[in-house]
Length: 252
Length: 315
Image (cartoon, rainbow over all chains, first blue to last red; front, side, top):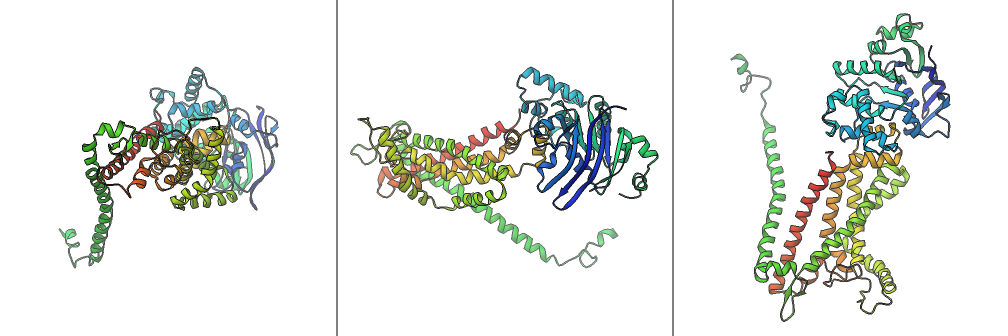
């Protein structure tokens, strides 16, 4: 068993008086893909955003508990969220490239963190685009607007953009829900490749996707983790009746 | 053939009295007529200005008008050079933009991104109020507050000068400050709208990459709002270059090279202050100044829109 990258302890999140996450406990393995599944509104995306503290931006949110990244509590008062988010990258549901060139999109993160030299940027951009399996498609038009790409290409560009800051963890919030089947399978292949170098946590609505790409799966319901464990076991022998109902499509 | 029959009068459920059709047509005519008024107005203004502004050009000569610095329309040997007046408008407007646009854009950023709701609830109405104040009031306040302060500054700066002609504070700098304040509401309101129109996903992307709040504003939100901000600047320039009333009161209104502590006359203030007593060629000359101003605004709008918007696109 590989060592754990993230350790979530007794995590609770409130939107005002509404308790959206209930005593979540989870151990996310290093260099593995962890899938978060569950019906809409079950808290899986909210949980994902706890890992890079994007929930800090939402008003009236209170968070109790701990998320340990390599043993460090990311909710410690002294934590610099910009450093945290450099380590924990994120890909969103809708592809959201900046209205800039393909190159500038990928170079955005490194530039934020102080990389200025043209040569260094060039190599980071190329490496990130290769890492996201889109380099061959865009290498001749790096200076063209990113918004001219197709949806699937835009999403892989967003993955490249996240990789360019060299994160250790990559959070993906339903990364293929806005994509066609061919683009979806490309992104899924990509996840397989990414877990060699990164810890990937992916929220998905697509049960087959979770079964195909993930090593571990967590099933969320009403803000709580109902079942968490190796994907193969969870899908073949669910321990909880509600998990079984959900993965067999009886509700959700 | 049967299918066709059903849409003939009296044969099917789709047949109505077509009572709406007349109303639709009437509405379209009304809309077209309203739109035509705008075109008619622009066309007639252009035509009228060209007709009334060109006679003086033939009498005095374009070169004399545009490149001579002597403006003496009522002298025995009248001279009609408006170079200083043109330069004053260019320099005055330019400085006002340099001063007002950054302040305006930063205020817009503050309102849209930084200020909490209670602060914004105070600042926003204040900005809107600023837009509603008549320009002559700005002028009055300029006379009351700005000019005396300028005069004090002027006396201190030129205390040892034997040649400086004291203006009592009515100078280019006063006019620039008043203009800068006057364009603020335009720049702020339009920029703020543009900034608020940037999709939240852009902001989220930048923050998720480890961008700080300030980096996110300057590197992703403002570039994404660029097109709207350019519009704000263009309208601000338009307002500044066309303003007459307020700056007539604070600029001293004598024809001079545009230096900060000189009394100056703008294209607009020249027309306003002389139209009452002018006659003959002098009067025609004022219409020519109007034409110059008109051409000016057109050219500046075209250039700004072209150049700034082009700069906004990624190569």
